[in-house]
Amino acid sequence: NENTSKNYKSGFISIIGRPNVGKSTYLNRVIGQKIAIMSDKPQTTRNKVQGVLTLNDAQMIFIDTPGIHKPKHKLGDFMMKVAQNTLKGVDLVLFMINAEEGFGRGDEFIIEKLKTITTPVFLVINKIDQIHPDELMPLIETYSSKLQFKEVVPISALQGNNVDTLLNQIKEFLPEGPQYYPADQVTDHPERFIISELIREKALHLTREEIPHSIAVVIDSIKREENSETVHVMATVIVERDSQKGIVIGKQGKMLKEIGQRARLDIENLLGSKVFLELWVKVQKDWRNKAGQLRDYGFRE
Ligand code: GDP
Ligand code: MG
Ligand code: K
Image 1: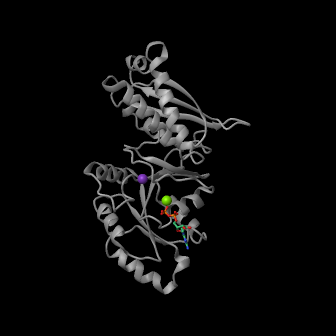
Image 2: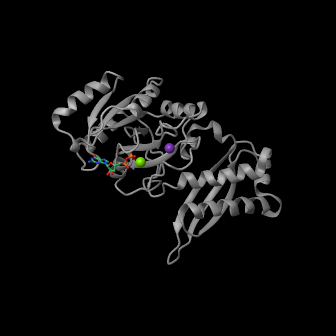
Image 3: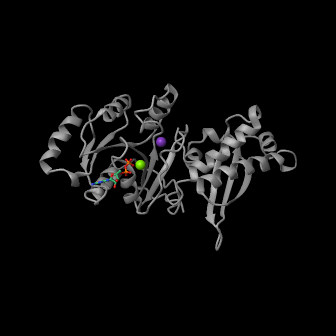
């Protein structure tokens, strides 16, 4: 499954931009199927994988930057730090703007954040179908006077203009790297990350001090059962030590059952259907220090 060919390229790409500039439309077009992107869900401190595009010669992992989409909110230092760390951790940032609206305060806010990082940034001017070609140059000049962009790419995410060009430019920019995700994974379940966070939250909450934050939850599969309204979720709670495994499972499995029951209710709310949740616990020593494994879990340091 793992693609290890020498010239394979891969990387993490963050798409940022004001609300309604077309980020979701772009992702949906790129990933090639409708994915319900849940950017309005509560902010979490981890990076959320929004979509994975697997090509013959490259894999592009698009991730969300928590916090930065909502310039109207008064964001705490903490969230800001998370957002900045995310931007630092990716290989490329796509800063998407709306050609129709032009420069605004939200853009100003984002540019201020982008100035604090060294990650390369592309300016993606979306909705060019809405403007006269003459309007493009002044727009580019305005933005380019505020920040240096590696590339400036005008597109129409809705109509598809230049979307392939942008993909090629992204690919050019990515480092050589492995295929992090199986070709058929992630894109079909944008809820995956949230479900894992819901389970993690319950486990942390119920075990209190006994389990430090050295815990991760991996969603093994999400399947709708045939001829049924029930969604079958299989997940693994990963701890660092055998003693922690004991705590998470509890006496006669009581703790794991409680975690599962509470998480299931939240997941049912999220998905709007009945859920059968199957939880496993696995010890994986020192998982936090293994960059490769972090990637497997969809995180980036
Ligand atoms: P997001 O908030 O940045 O994720 O924006 P969305 O992808 O939800 O798009 C907001 C609105 O802009 C939707 O009504 C889209 O159909 C529309 N939109 C997105 N891309 C384009 C485009 O290239 N051209 C035009 N005319 N509309 C677009
Ligand atoms: Mg969106
Ligand atoms: K978000």
